Length: 129
Image 1 (cartoon, helix red, strand yellow):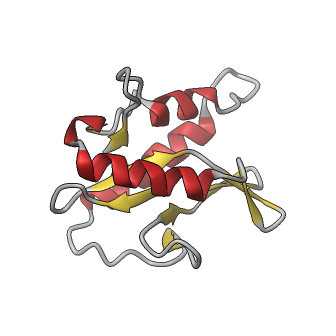
Image 2 (cartoon, helix red, strand yellow; image 1 turned 60 degrees about the vertical axis):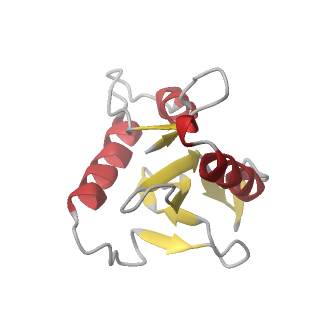
């Protein structure tokens, strides 16, 4: 699932679309992240290895997808829910110098988690376009 702003904008799709394209104009990082999401979506037991997804130490209800492309550590943050057997991407981020970029990404993820548990209309199926 993807987080939606109050106006309906899909912030995850906007973040993925903003990622740098290669010399041929291909959005390789976006493709790699979407491929990871498809893999996780197809995994039935939800016991994903920590190299692919892990809980943040200071934000126990927020998880980071771990995708590396061209030495850039992409870390879209999300949570389980709001529905059963759902994982919602809340904010796009990267890891740099042992911190997140944007720095406030975990705090934003926590705020958005509260929003989606109070208003189910603020999520949609992940957009792979």
